Image (tube, rainbow, N blue to C red; front, side, top):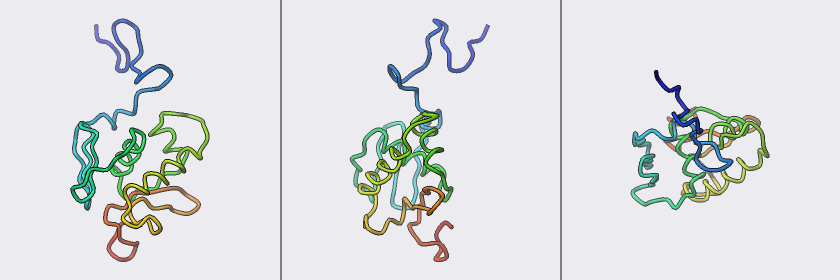
Length: 139
């Protein structure tokens, strides 16, 4: 008899801790993602920009890793809250604050973000080239 995914033979659930769901399976993959100037290693939970390690919190790392695996794709705050936090409801400003803090750490010029881009009225996307649309970057 096989055990269904996400359950154990003892009947316990697979959670990261009390009251905190385990991150989506994509965050547990061990493939190192390399994008222009960035290297993200989920197994080691290390992200670097131009060879320099970024001092990210666990949630900032999860957010960067999620977006970098889907370059150019736009996600609204609700979708990010579900995908990265594992929450089906909550204060959407949580995402806004984490995006702002992540930008402070990954963007060479925080006043002009080129990698973690706001798509006004829609959400956020990760642009690995850092080039504005129409200049060879992701659109």
